[in-house]
Length: 412
Image 1 (cartoon, rainbow, N blue to C red):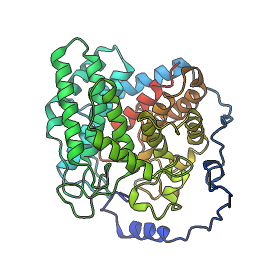
Image 2: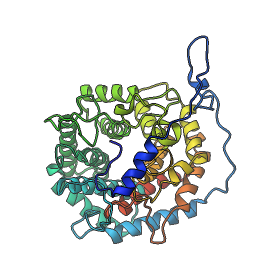
Image 3: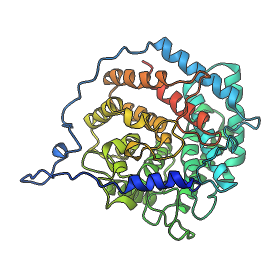
Image 4: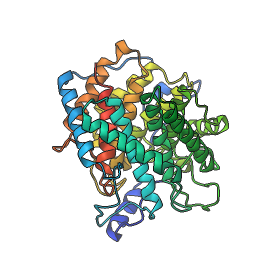
């Protein structure tokens, strides 16, 4: 839950508390005869029946995108740990996210490694070094994933590892088509992740990554919108290869996510903020990094209100309002930026925007591909990586994994 840290210094904490009590401006609600509609909400200047007019940009060439992808792959190969994983608890600084050892770092490493596996599979490099790197990463995941648990009663970061490992395993299952033994290992581990996500489901339905209530056997954490979206997308991908997640868990997560949906298809940060819908982080600018994920998840599970035009409008918003996310990028203190945006939403949000792009007809994707590609290419680091928040030594590989999968969906 917001804010995800404990080790703030006193001045930083006072600054955030001071910002939190600044009164929000009054917002007059427009009276309508038949109740409010999505199109006349003040925070929503778009008519979702209309296609937005996109800005004119100089789109990157296919060669530019492929060269950028290759540089990202080269970074992952170089950055991989000797044991096949990515990320570590090193590169600490004066301010660190609350991460009880060793379990929190088991979760960070499992999630980061899973993202890198997915990225290497999706980009399909035939470079022998990339293939050898991918093989070692898969071996690490097979060996270590079955031991992933929550760190403590209040730190449930393992939900990220369970979700992203499902996506990696789905791609590994396809990669090993014809190898019955390896495919069975993938299936068994996916079903184990279903079991673990059932065990760590919140009493409210859905999932959170902190439990500051009672730290009970079943988490009493608040349901967090983008965690629900992340898990639901992973489960939908598993279902697409014939593996059925527990329907009751899916239904409860969908219900929890729908309770957090606002009229303009943006989302509360978490259900615990339901009485503060106009707080900065719950406004469209604060929701910009998670709206894509949540809408994509609901559409994957059959929500027909998430139309093509809703997807297009939010892809448009992501580009023209990108500053809300970009100002928070690389800031060391989570949620200190405008709209309480944290840096680690940046590449996360663009990855799920790319998944949303996949939901549009192929013939209508090109203009939005150009927008996403420009954002990714402009932000690639000199060493080939992408990163948005200094998280121990996980940030460069996870950011690179997200960015590579985003760019892959920007290719013609």
